[in-house]
Image (spheres, rainbow, N blue to C red):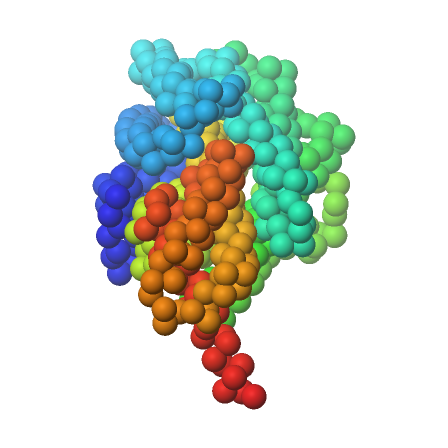
Length: 467
């Protein structure tokens, strides 16, 4: 596979410019859906109209076309990772089926609105049940992250893995609580059918939660969701970028680490501190409208900053390696980052007509699939890469390759031994993690060893000069 580098993005033979375009279209529609839900108290009247119905239909058709098109490319890029005959790999492979099932649900909603000027609340419940597969995706990935962390010999070097495990676990908890409360609200507090006259609202009072449920919503849904994205994921990204700090620059590194959580946390939790309450979510109160604007802009900007980090590393690695599977992992991780925040928003129980808020909830399936596989593959690839670099340095020293670098004949034999040893170790890690090794063939391994030799000799020369 060849890698083509462009000024502001990275493409491969599988993930190309059309994939980026379709992903961006899907993201833009999902974000629009979230904005309609977040600011429904301001935008509600224009949306509850024939124009709103036409807009909802257009958004639905476009987002499913774009999302399924992009998903096809991402699944091709991850094909080898899904070859092992396990239950969860079969579940991952069924992701397009889940999206098509959701498309059928949206089709039924649209037909009801066009023919009867109403839609069934039970269709939203069905949508939530299907989207609950995201809980399995997050939960399984948490288990895999923790298993890899527990099996690692030097846990201090695998804090990145632990941070992503915590992020996946918190998203699993948040999604479980959100879907459970949403289904309860739709069953208990909503009429069987929603029409244009239904008094839809995005206020917390409209959700008709008990005082205990309000606390569960705050600490079981919101706090885990924000912590997963603004703190745990950032810690994981920080340790991930640490491996590439020299290439991307110290200023860029610290900007990526500090800016996202500041933007995210200020907007979302600012109202809680101003009102000095910890018993309910006050973000939606009218006096805090400016914080909704700041919060929404903040997490969108934060997502792109983190995604930029993955793309930046992909561009850096694209100059150093010949295979593109790691580049694919990084691109998928970047895409997952910008999709996971909007899709974990929760506005479906606004029960507007048409049901804005349903699109972002439906595409949690796609976002959790990409997050579960993309972030995991990136983290494990970096961990494997670090371990193989350590192994290569160890072998280079053991075989005195640095001291015999000028002897081509002797080097050739030593190089063959090193290639075989490192390849065996890389293959063993690939079988254990189901993530493709950074090195696919002997030439890749040889190039890898030569890069380690160059780095090691450079450091050795620097120490000599310093002395």
